Length: 510
Image (cartoon, rainbow, N blue to C red; front, side, top):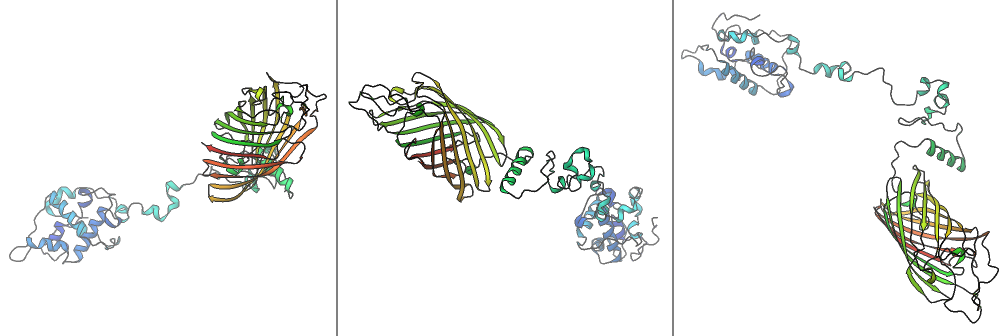
């Protein structure tokens, strides 16, 4: 209820004193700012206005009284002068700016009479309906801060279950499978959000073979949903085995095969050992040295690639002059069959074309296909096994000889170990290279007769194998380029491809 002015006494708090006339406490929230407009110290405009009015009514020496002092009459009694709307607004703004920053909020229990006193000329403003009392006593958002559990934004839906597996057995029955109900099921961490349930063996494995088979089973049946395929330099560091993961690569390779005692075996490397002119006596100690440079280009997608390889060859023969020129071109495809963090398996098909001059032994003179399986297996954090298993099959051609040509089953294996890292993404990798060649049929010419005739019978290759072993080293730089070399020796000094076999290469990775 508003209190009417009863006396012009400037000291009385119930009369129309100058401070009451100049204080916009009743019109401030309506004329100055919206109800929820924040002011300094997090208070609303209405609260700051009322706070300033209460402070001024209690202290006669306030800033408002000092501003109203020039309006006093010469006799010392102030004269109440009605203020316009613009003046009230300006005065309210000045009052808000002059209010102390550390003033406390008004006491809700104190009488609001001083802040509700109206001037006679402010009737239109006084007709405005006051705001509800709870909003004057409490700043917006205070209730949410006092009781956050009752906020609409924090309300929890009881129908939503957490994506955890600690209690998943309680929501399933035996018809859903033993993985949900057995003690070693999803409660042991085998149930992962985003992946189907994994039915692991019930018994824990305490052997190397058992742990390997269990991990392999999880890799195949329970793949990690967060696994992201990437190129691991240590997983594809072998110098002899082809890598399983398709990638766009440009490779330069150099091979040096020393002391080839059976160079024409199965017509794999060269066509034959026919001399340029007939010897006067039989030549039985046949050998050759083969040097070859390859340019290899692969264009890859996420799960497959195409590649082509073109060699340049120089061969030093004991029965003929040295020859040099381009060899047989080969090309093929690669397809990634299985990919997880532990194991990658790919299929590769390589086709050979008789593009080299086989009469000079720059090629073997026949078409051939070479299907193979490429693998990479992770044995430890920085240890990998890399392998290639294939079969070289001759198809015949202009220089093919049925009595010599034959199929070869071969394998390459490599144990790769990171030795050190120059930088976190530039590892130095050591490799232990092993390769084997098992001849299925075919043969070779052991001796050159003076008549030029092929000796009979020709030694057949069925049941004969070559083995080689040696170390290698590869340096990877920022997963963009790598280079390295390897050397292998034959385990049999009499029957072998080369003794030794050098290989060096550099790869540019895209």
